[in-house]
Image (cartoon, rainbow, N blue to C red; front, top):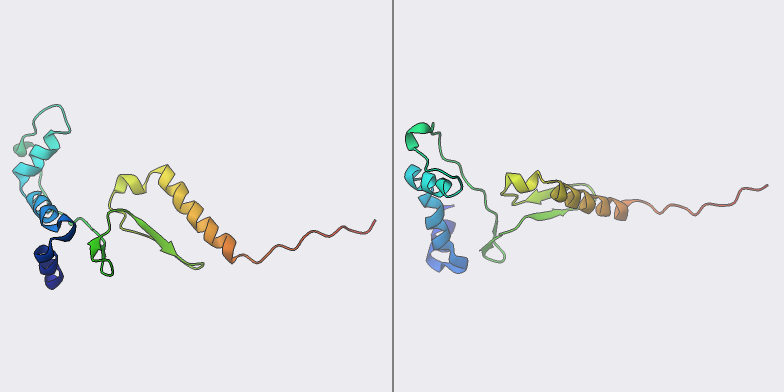
Length: 124
């Protein structure tokens, strides 16, 4: 909400103003191309690109702690599991991340499973 944004700007905890300026600056095509040019070997020409609408970078705000969450959060119970604040598509499709999430789900399912009875010896 606008009220929350204004409170975050006013308080400037965790460097919110700097973060907001940096993100808002990416709405400038010239600035965005300059940033992208730093990742490739040649300067990028704005006339060579077809531009679409700008996107929104999702970022989870922890109201209790009063800060932005800078890492992903995994939470759930024995019936559901949620990965929150997964802001990087490259990270969320990485195999190590998938293994981590699968391990967390497996651990929750193991806690839920009824105990397996010990095997009894069959009469001979």
